[in-house]
Length: 237
Image: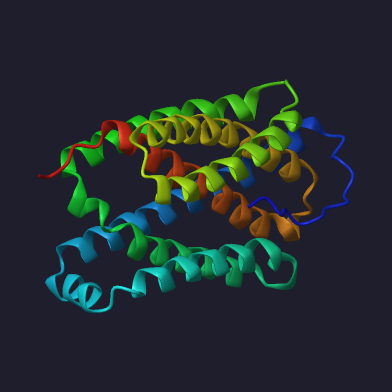
């Protein structure tokens, strides 16, 4: 989601002060994103290692759908209601989302080996890092990327739903490749978008922008990781 708050402040004429302000916001974005990923990882690993949690999920198989719905609701609440909530509330909701996402993702620790998960994480981190650096420093306007990638993402979701019923392994590989390419592109585009908004954001709105920016990049990272895991993940069986 990329519903950034509207800002109307004119760009600072002092380029040094502007760079400092943008740098501060971006550091906050990456810091929040990092802690969000850490929370998700810790929750997922705890769930996968807890027999009580596994037994509870096994006895309530429909619970996973409730978790997915809660994730969607939280994303829309944070991105859509960011202007009506305080910065601390937005941050709290972001970390709540990270916890809920951890509850949704813990099965990967039961399906894939820990070594392959760690390997995929580092591959994801390297790819994500390269693209977010590109998005931050490039002078190329990536606006056109956004429109294309949005429609590509919609197509990816539709294709994924269709493949639930067709169960085509070939189609699944095509979807996985497309997913990697889409989220690689979104990482660069979101980074540039957040940087542009940081350049115009008044000081009092910087915290909210950092939270929404962290959510966007967090989602890019998680989805990129999950698609790469299809290629590099090794089954525990």
